[in-house]
Length: 116
Image 1: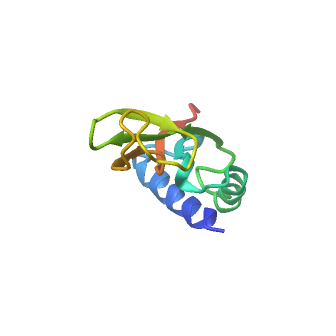
Image 2: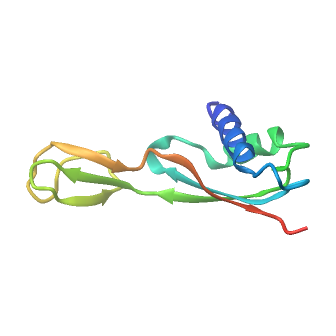
């Protein structure tokens, strides 16, 4: 289960992003962007985060995940499109010279701290 490794990295990044001058910070919401091709099982990631955030400022934080669609660009005609199928041929000019624009990312888009 690679979700545990992902969760560990996300926690490290989130904790490092909290300013040092905030006393007893508590993260209320952790907003993520995860691409459809990232092969992340959301409920597994949520479970892993729940386990490893115990006794940290992230304990009990709401996890909000925005799914990022698979977007491609044709290098021949520069057409851009979204796809849900594994066939990555350009629908405009039918060539197979495509570049992945989005769909593999795993990133924290924002962290919301509680007002105490």
